[in-house]
Image (cartoon, rainbow, N blue to C red; front, side):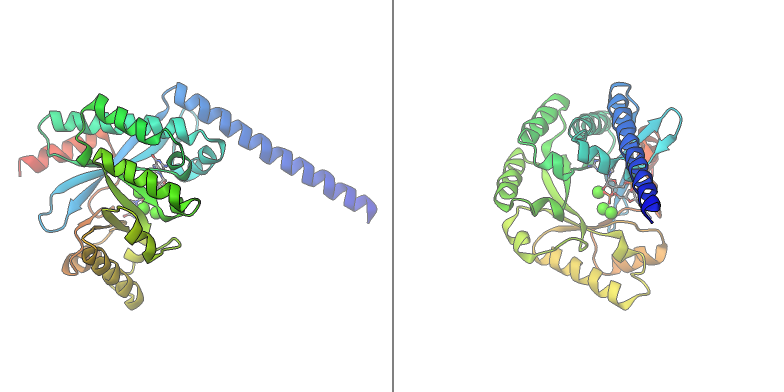
Length: 279
Ligand code: C2E
Ligand code: CA
Ligand code: CA
Ligand code: CA
C-alpha cells in the first residue's frame, strides 16, 4: 500500500507539472499571439426584427494559431483572464473593432452599432474608462454606436465600484448591455441601480422557445421586463425560422444567431452590408 501511495504521489505530481506546463505554454503562446498579430475579430450581425435590417454587429475574438488553426474563445479566454493577459488583448479588441466599424460608417454603409464583450478583469481595471474614451477619440466612432456587453458576474465583486464604473462609462455616451441575461445571479436590484440600456436573452432560453412552455415563459417575461424598464431586448442564438417567428410575435426588438449569419470576418460582413443597401 505504501508503495502504491508513493506511485500515486508521483503520478499526481507529474500530472500537476503537466497541467502547469500546459498553462505556461498557453500563456507564452497568448503573449506571443498579441505581438505576432495572431488575433482576429469576427463580427456577427444583429438584426432589427421589425425592419429586418442589420443594425449592429458583435465583435467576437478568434485566435489564428499557426499550427492549431482558428481557436475559439472558450479555449483561451478563461486563461487570458487568469493571467491578466485579457487586459492588453481586450484593449486590442476595442481598438480594432472600433476602427473597423468606423471604417464602415465612413464608407457610407449603414450606421451600425458595435457590441464589444468585456471580461471581469477588464471591467475592474481602473484604466478602462480612459481606454474607451481614447479609442473613441482616435477612431471617431460615435460613442452612442458603441455597446459594451457585460455579464452579471462582473457586478458581484464590488457593487459600489461597479456602479461608479458604469456611470463613468455612461458619461462617455456609450450603451451598456447585460449579456447572457437570466443565467447569472440575476437580481432585480441591479436593474434599478445600474444604468443599463439593453438585455441580451441567453441562447439557452432561445433554443426551445417555440416548443418548451417554461423557456417560452422565461423569454416572454424577459421581453416584458426589458420593455417595462424601457430597455432594448436582443435574443441571441437564433437558429430557426420558428424561433425567429416566436420572438418577433412576442415583441423582441433584435436578434442574432446562425439563422441570420455566423460570425464572419470583416470583408464578408462588408459584402452583406453592401447587398443590404442595394435591396
Ligand atoms: P457570447 O458573448 O455569449 O457570444 C455569443 C457566442 O454564441 C459566440 O461564440 C457566437 O459565435 C455564438 N453563437 C452565435 N450565434 C449562435 C447560434 O445561433 N447558435 C449557437 N449555438 N451559438 C451561436 P464564440 O464566438 O465562440 O464566443 C464565446 C464566448 O467567448 C462569448 O460568448 C464571450 O463570452 C467570449 N468572447 C468572445 N470574444 C470576446 C472578447 O473579445 N472579449 C471577451 N472578454 N470575451 C469574448
Ligand atoms: Ca456577448
Ligand atoms: Ca451572450
Ligand atoms: Ca453565452
